[in-house]
Image 1 (cartoon, rainbow, N blue to C red):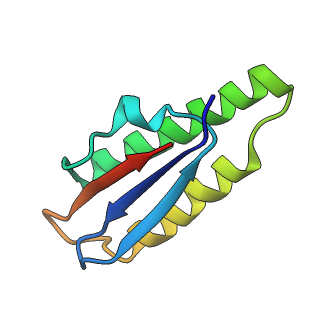
Image 2 (image 1 turned 60 degrees about the vertical axis):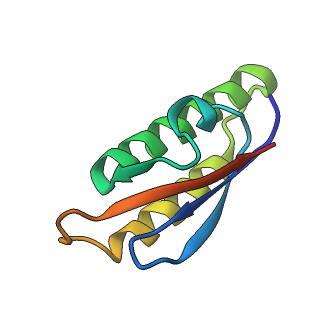
Length: 95
């Protein structure tokens, strides 16, 4: 269950480095791919939920870092609420 970092680029060009306690983000995102905001948020929620569940299965407790990362992603996304056609780019995924 390797820790994974992934970088996203928001519609305003700002890049954000994100953390996952699991490589599950690679199952849901591809570097170089752009995602409509709603789809991006859905995938991010799924990724962080799966990552936390993997930690729970291995260590017996959910990963608070995954929950915190999702909260940061949702806070960043809120800046673009109501912007039709807003896209989020997956820049990179590294372990």
